[in-house]
Image (tube, rainbow, N blue to C red; front, side, top):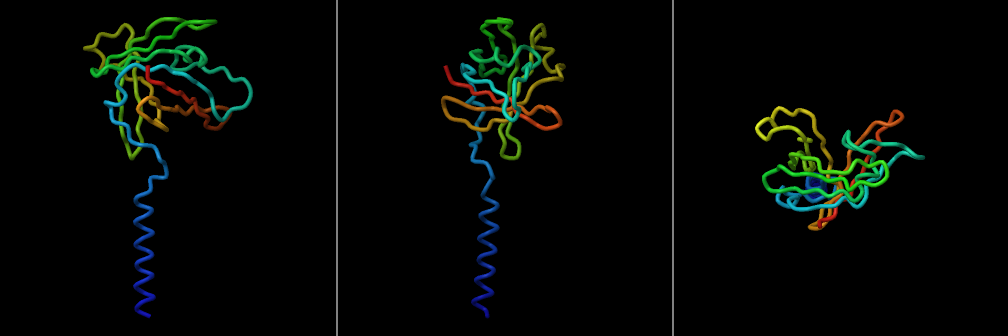
Length: 163
């Protein structure tokens, strides 16, 4: 009886250990320094919705306009993204302030648009964007943003490649 009891306790302890070590996601936590540099969005897609859906990304331009956009993320946090233009795409650079956060094992890439805002006033900009990083390597990362569509959550998924 003692062996059975000890075996049961050992199995329960092992199960608790395995559950506590498993995050449910296999996404590495990406430190801020790994985001620094120049990136290009190679893919911007809506996942979870069927048919043609018109999406304006980041309250700026159509989702398709972000494919090929260039993102500059310097160490000081004051960066930019540039839409290269094309049919119905407003070309040009947009100033941003960016950050990276880790909360509960989830990495987020965050930014606020800063066009027309002095650096000293950046703390007064309340609205911004937060993307959950779902995969990260040295040369690419995938980030997603949830939106509500027809009563359910769908995701805008961006693939960034290092330039």
